[in-house]
Image (cartoon, rainbow, N blue to C red):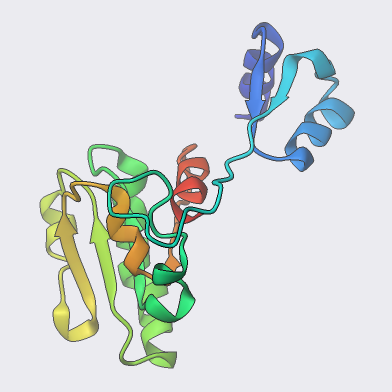
Length: 164
């Protein structure tokens, strides 16, 4: 609810925002004082081309550039209901449309504690792979596109960071 969120922002000493657009909107449209807003952009410095898995910035060097990546990925812990909803919607509505245009495409779904409903989505014949827990987010470095089909919840900010 927008009013509850704005009330929380007004009561807070500081609110971190994800973009200059969000910062401008809160200040201009909702009267949030500028001293209560801090831009917390999620940008990573480009890593050295020889960065190894587990090192800060792995996946941003030339070895993991666009041509070295393939397919699709999504990530999210499944104790969080918005992530369960997201992958169910992805599997039922979004993935079939992608596969219709890209019949060889593969989607890997990573996340701890996949529910039985999420596990039932595993369908290698349709290119959909429920992989479960990922020991690190380095698994994202092999994928070309991170899908973030969240319909509710605040997790989209984390998905943008993951994709970056």
